[in-house]
Length: 334
Length: 95
Image (cartoon, rainbow over all chains, first blue to last red; front, side):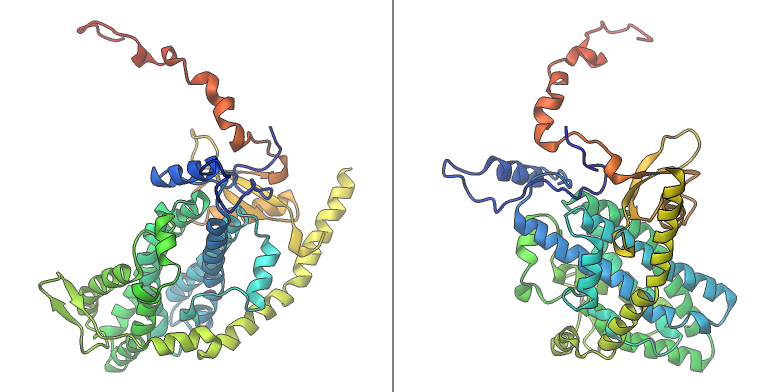
């Protein structure tokens, strides 16, 4: 028996290794890991796992957690200017959910041996990334709707298969997140529908938001399959269940009829139904823009990180006060 | 202890009366009171619970995955502990 918090977050994770053979054949720990993945069983925090599997998960889950936290900013931008109390309450609940999603994912990442302050530090110093979609500005109220419908819609398409990810804590966090995301998407759709059916100026505002968010949303699925560096290994490990292009196609096919009901146009002249494939064809994606935003040259990269660092620094006195209060009362009890 | 190394707490939520508490996740907090409040905000935003337990993660004692075979092995060769082990003639009712 060992004392370690195996129920959720084990900080003293089991030994991991490269999984190279021991000389007498395959490492039995690697064989057990491979068998668990093949059987669609789940890998849990204290199980032995290859170093590369652990590193891949930390990279992906940290990026995912950071995206939820940075993702609070573009929408929070509109809380004070929401057009009604109903919309304001909805938007506050949604932004609070994003914080919650970040926290579920940070906890899950910590089960792999990554410390919370280390993760935050890597976000603040640009050593770990967040989704490039959050480097676009929210210029009008309609952007809140377009983010809910398209950005959260793309996120859900990506995330539903992650509920069956081979790493248990990640899969469990995703189940909770997906349940909550569906409210996010529906509120965005409803918001856009209200604008689309409103005055001509409101309709134009909704169309403009969709024009600006459509292509960045398609880029959220990542580079095309033949250029995606991590995909093949992640699929073999069952971290990932579908390829980038497959999920992107699924998203396009879902959005086309939804746009028709909204009465809005998707900004792609090449978009049309392909009877033979049973799917929609769509135009080429401008990946140079994607690469530029990744490189830090998006419209809001600098602003997002500056704001995040400031929020963290301005919260320091609160953390200190809570720590001091806890220490004082701990002393009283003894 | 600074704000960045608050201890980790495991959170257990009873979703409604009549059910046991189940593990919901974990969080960092400076003390038990704050852990409870944060657990409420983090894990019951949609009325998912009527009761919450928080336990310092360091206080959980766990069996090791390395010994799982030998640790649980004594149960493996006792199929007679299951009702399906026994053959009962057709037509016997309420058994």
